[in-house]
Image 1 (cartoon, rainbow, N blue to C red):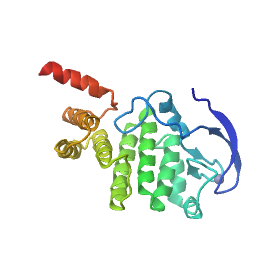
Image 2 (cartoon, rainbow, N blue to C red):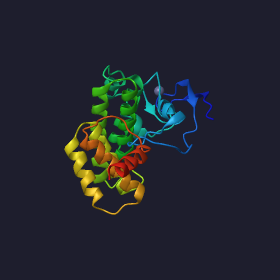
Image 3 (tube, helix red, strand yellow):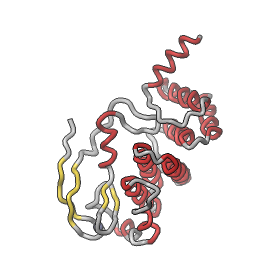
Length: 228
Ligand SMILES: [Zn+2]
């Protein structure tokens, strides 16, 4: 069971103190996951606690009491302050997008890309459909920069390609998603990874932009067994 406590923390950027939820982010994610990595069950809603925002200065980080001088020098910029209150996104998405901007500014493209994906999850939950697409397009751009800079953003190169295919599919970039799946399905992969590419390809072929999770592999396999 996960219990959330409030604890007082001091903002690294401005020094103001406030109460923040204390959650153990080191808990390993178990159980089903969406194809873009979002955990299921209780951990699904804990995503909202993965980011903290200082209500004095707007510094947004997974741990508000930590940072670097380089990171916080960016938060006074107009584009950062505008993102904090951008009406196109739910508040928590804005916090993630602000954190993403800080990470991008400091060349941490893999973390920046994931923060944009997390912003998309919050948009999904709150029915901000077009905004979710914008977050995923931003994530694709950032993961491309991560790859250029040899920064890994997945557990393995194959899983990185799965995330990219899923991000493209969720943005209705079916051609790009299909090309990734076709190329990966010609390589040898562990069975689970191969099955995930099959599932992704199946969804792309149906032009499905919805949220799907890895338990659907079993349904797809059962369906294919029946139809053969
Ligand atoms: Zn602050």
